[in-house]
Structures are given as structure tokens and as C-alpha cells.
Amino acid sequence: MNTPNPPEPARPTRIPRGEARIRLLDTALRLIREQGFAATSVDALCKEAGVTKGAFFHHFDSKEALGAAAADYWSETTSAMFADAPYHAPQDPLDRVFAYLDFRAALIDGEIAGFTCLVGTMVQETYGSSDAIRAACNASITGHAATLEADIQAAMDMRGVGAPFTAQSLALLTQTVLQGGFITAKAAGHKGPALDAVAHLKRYFAFIFEGSATRAEDRSAA
Amino acid sequence: MNTPNPPEPARPTRIPRGEARIRLLDTALRLIREQGFAATSVDALCKEAGVTKGAFFHHFDSKEALGAAAADYWSETTSAMFADAPYHAPQDPLDRVFAYLDFRAALIDGEIAGFTCLVGTMVQETYGSSDAIRAACNASITGHAATLEADIQAAMDMRGVGAPFTAQSLALLTQTVLQGGFITAKAAGHKGPALDAVAHLKRYFAFIFEGSATRAEDRSAA
DNA sequence: GAATAAATACCAACCGGTTGGTATGTTTGC
DNA sequence: GCAAACATACCAACCGGTTGGTATTTATTC
Image (cartoon, rainbow over all chains, first blue to last red; front, top):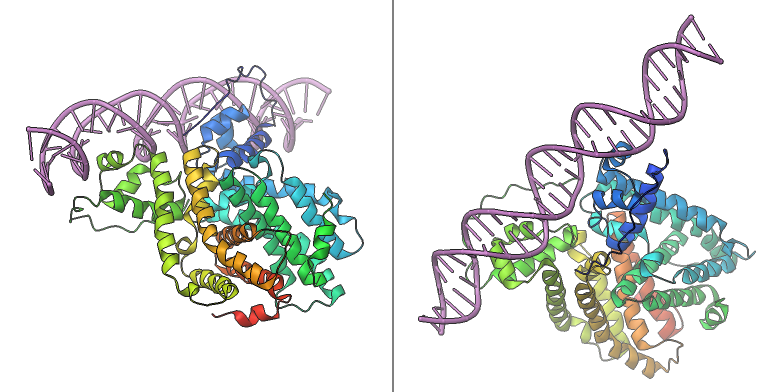
């Protein structure tokens, strides 16, 4: 395995009291997204966060508890980010849905670990070994999908779309496609497949709500 | 972590000479799909396969090499399985595409580890730490997508679908949606989200090739 | 508001077990 | 007899987790 580690210039300043927990969580999000949950050791996590192992086990009962807490923390920070995002502005709920998809596409940039999803990565490894982590990851995914559901439902009502699927199912599909895009992007080594997937998803929404894909291409804000 | 291990009744029969490698690969596919790559130790893998560690390192230079070999082995066995599958029978290439999607939906059954994808699981953990494994997983995904591409291209030509996307992009999308479905299914703890995702994917294909989703519901063979 | 008690936050050192990997055999088929 | 296919024994490093302890903050008492 290739493990290039830049030589860090020691750690002179001590972490201020009261910051250990939040530093551990921030560092955990980064390391788990880069390496996965199992490959992220408690030792390495503490070293990277500039905190001792005593502090770690003071705040978390076990590594499993840290995983569940990291999923919850991920939900908090991302939901705050999405709540503040500009895609809620349009009056037409369908416009808000398309603005959401454009926003998600815009987020897919830079380093792969920087745009992928923590809970999608983590649940792959832990769904069979830790029900606590699995449940926390599921809550994160379905919770975020739920914030989309109202707009989708409103758009369906407005357009009179009587579909053989629910708004909930369509909201979850957006997360499914994004998660799949992250995997194919990781496999390819670049963001391309993830962006393509979102473009197809937009086209699917255009078919459903407008009966044609033509406007989907025009809609692209980016 | 919950780790229920059934008490195995010892291993009386010795593994016949020449079978160690294939047994290690078969066992690796199972364990990695259940637990992930990092959580599958060489010791546990050997024990489960009924083989010693000496045999393991005789056949594989390292654990990383085993991972790459497992991805290749996965490609071989699954491509043989898909080549023999009945979805190639229809004359119309579009019917073959829909038959493929029905076939994929039919495979989503039983234990979660039984219908999920090895390389999708493995590339999540290793894309940043092992380029050899990442490349092997990518080859598996794109290689399988390529077997679909010809049918999609033929269907596009036949229907005169001049789309702002390529047949290759659409073929890869099917894998993206499946991979995403496996993640949301793992998170939910049941196959539901994966089946929903395939249903939406069929509808997308129906929109593209038939201009309407109505026939997609009728098409469902299952 | 000073003295004290109690809880919290954190640290360095350590523990038994497991990790991936190796060195050195022995057995088997040709 | 010789190489390939295994087996046995072993190793240093690392794993998650525990220990006993100290510094700091907060709550309580008078």
C-alpha cells in the first residue's frame, strides 16, 4: 500500500481545554473519508487531532461510539450547510428541486475525499458489524432526503404528476444516485462519473415533471 | 460491535493439494462482502478457508495483492454468470436492455451481503491507499458496463435517439445506480431502496427510448 | 465571597491480543 | 531430484482499551 505521509513539524502548542472532543470529530470526518473507518486507528486519529488516547476514551466509550458520533456530527454540519444554501430561493418548488441538483453538482469538485459522503463510506464497512453506526448513517441519509421530499411533493401536486412512486422514493433516489456516483468516481479516480450521474438524474426529473428532457439541458446553471 | 460467530466443529478433512488459492479467493469474496477489506484479516481468511498462512503468502505477495486478485476473480466469475444469463435472448436490443434491468432486480434478494457488489465495497476503502486494488475494481465495473454498451448503442440507433449523452455514459449509469442502491440498502437494513432504485432506472430508460414511462411498468417481468 | 467539595477534562504509560509478514522447514507431483 | 505447494513457528509493530493520576472548572457551603 502506498502511504505517503508528509513530515509534520512537531506539535508545540497544546490543544486548549474543552476542544478535544470537537477536534476528534473534525479529524475523524477527514480521516474516515480518506481511509475508511476500519483503517482509521484510534492512535492515528488522536495523533492527528493532537490529543491523547486518554482524552479519546474520556469522550467516547469505544471506537464504535466514535463512529456513531461522527455520523451524527456529519448530519449536523451538513444539514446546517444545506439549510443555508441558496437553492431554497426559487418560488416554484420544481425550480428548487433543480436548483438542489445543480448545487449538488457544484459541490462535486476538488479532491475526491472532499466531495464524497462520510456516512455512505462508513455504512459499507459497518452495516454488518455495528448496528449503532448503521442506524446513525441511515438516519443521516434519510434525514437529508426528507428535506427534499416536501419540494418534490409540492412539485408533483402542482404539475398533477400522478406517478407510480412516492415523493419519498424519489427523494431517496437522489441520495442513491449520489452515493453511486461517489463510488464510480472513486473507482475511476476522478469526479467525471459522479457528475455524469447527476446530469442523468436531472434529465430523469425533467422527464417526470416536464415530459421532455430538453429543458433539463437548458436548466443547467453551471 | 456485534460479532456472533457460530462454533465450528473443527476441521477434520484437509484441503486437497492445489485448491488453496481458489479456496482463499472464494472465501475472500465472502468475507470482504460481509465485513469489508480492512476488517478481513489474513489470519481470519486463512482460518475460514482451512488453509495456513504459509499457503496464503505462497500464492499472494501481500494482502494488497490478494485484494487486487479478488477483484479480478470477481470479474471472472460474475462475467461468466452474466454471459450465461437469459437476458440476451430478445431480438430487439432495447428488450435486452430492459431484460438486463429485470435480471439485476431479480438478483437483489436474500441476505444483503449476498446481492451487493464486492468491488464497490472494496474500492470505497482502498481508493486512496492502494492504486492496484482501485484499478482492478475500476476495470471490473467499467468492464461489466461495456457488455451493456453495445445493446444500448443499438437501441439508440434503432430508435433514432440523438441524445446529449453517450451509450457508454448510460451504461455506466446503470452501475452507478446499482452501487448507490447497495449503499442505501445497507443503510436501511433491507433490499427495498435497491429495488426502488432499479425501478426508477427502468423508468428513465422508458422515457429515453419510448418517450413515456407507462410501458416501463408493464415491462416488469418479475 | 472565600473555602471546600465534586465533577470534568485531560494525560502518559501500560496491557494483552492481533496485525501483516517472514524464515525455515516438509510434503507432493512430475 | 527438483521445483512447486504447502505447513510451522515466529516476529516486531500496532490494535483497541485500561490504568492511575493531575490540572481545571463548577457547584456547594458557610
